[in-house]
Length: 95
Image 1 (cartoon, rainbow, N blue to C red):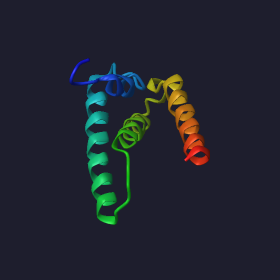
Image 2: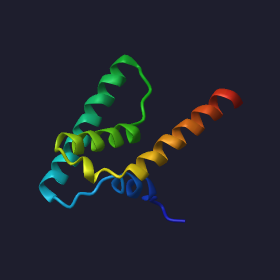
Image 3: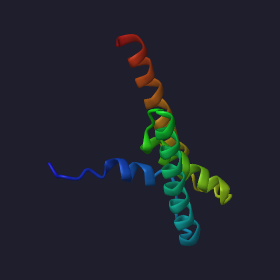
Image 4: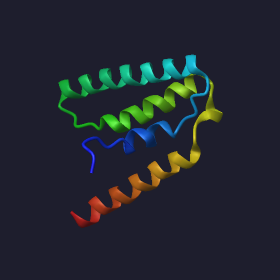
């Protein structure tokens, strides 16, 4: 087993197609910047958050802002939604 596991990063960046390098960099930087701002505001108010989910939303929002909706992978988003529904159901009824 390795020290670092890049499966989450690979999954997050398989959600979008960044063939356009300029828009790709602006999407990544805006997603990171919005995650930092969101996390700091949540920290001030004591709200628990997930930075991974914030990055996924920031990357997808950045692609929508660049009008690159065709570059968003619907199949990968479906995996996120199905997993979220399953774990929410699991936590609601079994904990």
